[in-house]
Length: 104
Image (cartoon, rainbow, N blue to C red):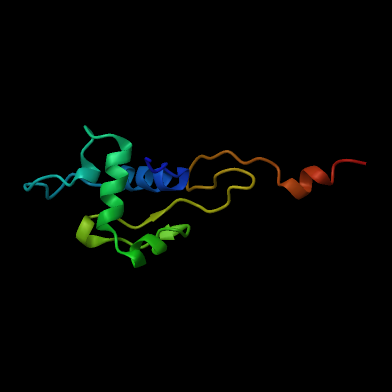
């Protein structure tokens, strides 16, 4: 049975892909950077290359760079209860406790 892609894994890959640079690719491009492959193939390749410590380090709002994979440090925000908070433009909805307090 095929493994399902978790939304969080896809989100992390998306963040990494946005921050990747094109420099230093005289050698073969790793599968996780190959845009001709499916998202599933790219995510699985990246997950195989990451150590357990690196994977755990990516579960927080800001991840340290991974120089050996040329992944830069990034910040994606960690407040999703009322919207995704990121640097720049973002959408914020009222907090759940604030909505609950509006009812008489």
